[in-house]
Length: 116
Image 1: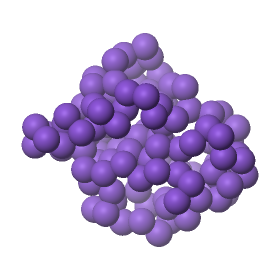
Image 2: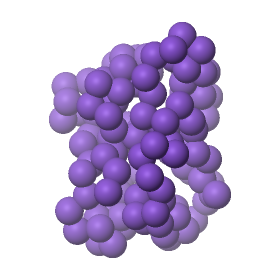
Image 3: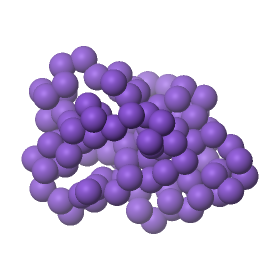
């Protein structure tokens, strides 16, 4: 199973739904890594050092910072960018299948947009 990090503003209802489907996910909150309030590049660097795919809703700035990292040749385990407009139950379902079916290697240097 892939390792995940949760951006600090990621919807808690979606996480709770995912936890009901995946009882013991390898999921760390950015806040628990003492990164609350940190800029996106710092969070991406930490996620890369931990080899964790980042869960986020941030369509405004995160894609640009991922692009900058990839162009600079810096490691990026990937980002799951989940629309905050999609139904939460659909987000839970799609993340469940992504966590179980996507190899981590397929996520490197990419942003996977949800809904898929």
